[in-house]
Length: 153
Image (cartoon, rainbow, N blue to C red; front, side, top):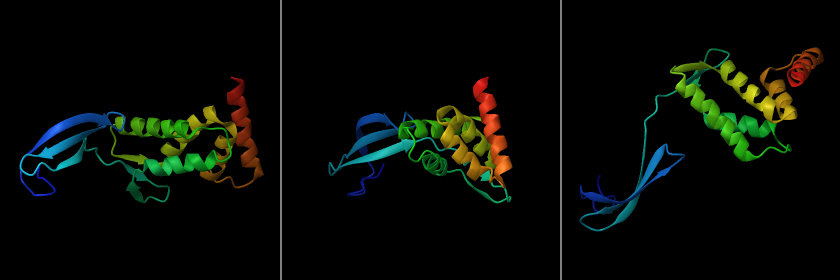
């Protein structure tokens, strides 16, 4: 590793510790020549996960988009941010462990709704109303009936 200060090609590691729930390693390094200290991060290079949108366009998976949607659905609801981050991590982990390079946005939306229904029913209905783009009140009522059936089981 080259020193960012003097560009000498020799550094030694002073300290290593896991970060980002063990997915990365933070290393404190020191240049052998000028003794400049700096930090590096090492992480596994993940295969890109591509999301296929409803209209057929493709974009790279973004956990931030899922989290933003969850935060919006849970606005003014008693749901902790940590819980929403946990849901987001669960979904990303499940998708990446699925072994596929592409996933439909509908699949992600269903995963979000499945988890959200057990966390907060109002947030679930909010998310579903935007995600499923309810055309009229009858479709909305049918969704609520399904939610009530699930709760009674």
